[in-house]
Image (cartoon, rainbow, N blue to C red; front, side):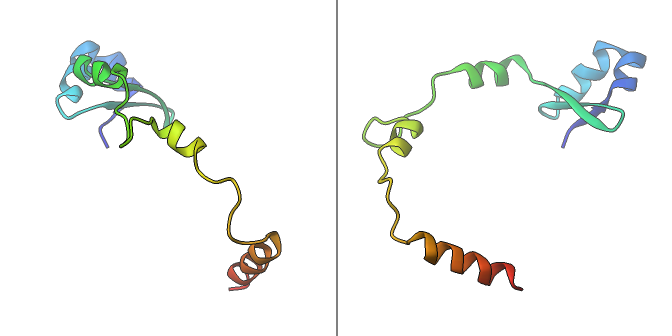
Length: 88
């Protein structure tokens, strides 16, 4: 992961960000916690493009909404399996 502490940005300014961007998106860290991600203009534009569609012309959300709402297992079966998994 490409990490840049906020202290380095304060010290070096935009030069620190530009240098880090050469290795991909930059995760900005303040007090050992992630606070932001800086993207190149190309990466940002790619994120803004319309999402590709799944086969059949559906978006992922449309495909998910079209899935059957009733599963093959009953609640009792699911609960039993969870108890078994948690008993390890």
